[in-house]
Each structure stands twice: as structure tokens, then as C-alpha cells.
Image (cartoon, rainbow, N blue to C red; front, side, top):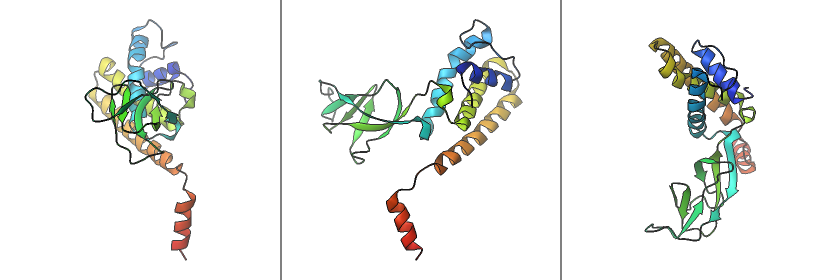
Length: 190
């Protein structure tokens, strides 16, 4: 598991045959590229699936003004700490209709608790397979800027797909079965 942004960037660089960097905020050409591309690569991977380590729940603050011209009566500010990458739903009211517009959630509900995918900015809080996927996503992005070899890109892309499949498989194994689901299964086996 990677413990810093610099380590993730260095692993991505070595994956495309480049030298490691000492600091992602450094002034070398590769450090500048990593610093520019890393946040986008990280957020793309985090948004791509319901990763258990990135799920957060938060009650939203209702904004005083109603959304102008919208079919909804209320608007709520999406979380910024931790930053909301993707809303997964409203667990207290799963059938409630809502729409995301910019940094706001619009709904007819008077109160709003959401389940969402958060931005993880501390690499040590990432699942190790998810960290590997981010390394490979960054390596792929870097390869377009640094490496002219199409085979290298294809190999990284294939490896990324394999790691994502494995990460999703492991992520699904960690889903807890509810008591009701467990009881139904036991009863069905009698």
C-alpha cells in the first residue's frame, strides 16, 4: 500500500520506465507532470466504483434559496470535507427523487442525508488494490506524455483492467450480509 502521493507518483513513473521522483511538488519535468495528473487519476478511479474505503454519509445543509426554475423545492450543499465525488443515494429515503446540479443536490425532501463517495487525499487510507489501480491509472496518463511506445500503454491498460477487476472482487467480498438476508438463506436451505 502506498503511503504518500510521491510514492504513488514514483511507482507510476517506474512502471513506464522512468526514474523515481523525490517529491511530487518538485520542479523536475516528471514531478510537475505527476503533480498535475495525479489528482485527476485518483478521482477517476475513486468515482469508478462504490469502493468501501471511500463511502461516507453526511447530512446536508439546506440552502435558503429554492432552486430557480427547477422542478424541486429544496437545494442542499454537497459536502466539501470530505469532498463529494459521487452521490450514491439517500439511505433514509432510497426512493426519493433528486438531481445533482454543480455542487448542489436538488430534491423535494425537507432534510437530506446522503451516502457518497469521498475524495481520499491520504494514500495510506486507500485499500492496497485501489492504490495499485491509481498507480496504474497515473502511469497510463503519464505514458501519453512521456512514452511514445504504444505497447507500453497497452500493457499498462491491460494491467489496470486486471487490477480493477480484482479490486472490485475483493471490495464485493467485504459487503456485510444483513440479518434478514442471512435468515432467508438459512430458511431456504431447510
